[in-house]
Length: 424
Image 1 (cartoon, rainbow, N blue to C red):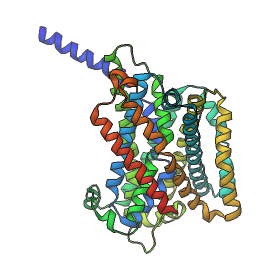
Image 2 (image 1 turned 45 degrees about the horizontal axis):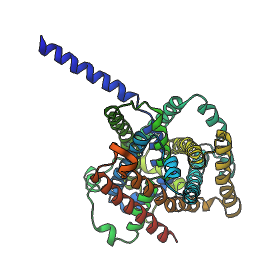
Image 3 (image 1 turned 45 degrees about the vertical axis):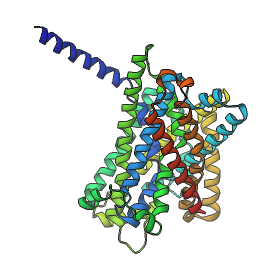
Image 4 (image 1 turned 90 degrees about the vertical axis):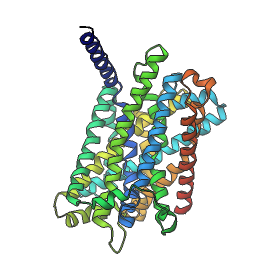
């Protein structure tokens, strides 16, 4: 009898824990879209078409670093009740805080530029709309976003989850059509020194790392995780931190599948061609013929459109969080959204109108260069503050996590700077 009662008690405890975990599911999906936005597509396509499966280990490394940084975001809010922007305002001088705010805002605009261009390219592929008008149409998504934000976080999280799954399904079908070489694919996850000796490989690898970890995601996740109930005791807060980390890790695993899938698709379809395929529109045009299915290119474009719209949602939320956290300014969502999109729309329309549609890919690369320059200004404060026992209390990051955080920060910042130098 006692054995049966103890078994039932354990099962009941597991059920309660599982239900509590489900309460923490959602923010991870909002964060994961930043790791599969249109800015990642160009680097993944370039890596696969030029070097086959050889850079898959770089995508895996980037994803592991992203999981680490997002865990630190969770730890920061659970321990202090502050998001990264609020913590920076509390811990740094007004001058430093304003500098970090400007840096974060520039990063959000650069990210929004990538989303705008990606969505405009997808509209051109699907409906033949010129990029100039596609960019204007994409800018009007602010109206849809405003309607959704009034419904609450759960509705946004559900929409984002559907779009993420749409991207994953489209890429999954493409991979089945591409029939990649499994042995070479597995081999691609083994790090090699070839990245240091093959011309151009290091630049593409650094671009993948620099484009994966997004600074605005750190501000976003450290804020929205606070919408959950952590409890009052240290034990319940540690449990909340664990569940929120599982949520972001599961979502980022899906993002890893998308990014690795794009590189594998590019390797299977385009590697060995006389010229590397780095243009998203060119990749779409070639996919139907290479994969032997007339809908292959359409699936590619649908995934791209879902990616752009998804990242638009999180970019807007991050803009509001950064503004309110650093400056204590509460502005209506439509003002933040409209101003951010206008800052991204103007350079896009100027380049398309004056230089032509052929320069759009270069503008997309430049958006990643600008993003890379802002990355250190988010990673450094995050790792530093989560390792401060006086600030974090009992939930301070353990020594091994702090060490990994500093190594990851050095690697990400170094990769971003090298990528920028290479771009010039």
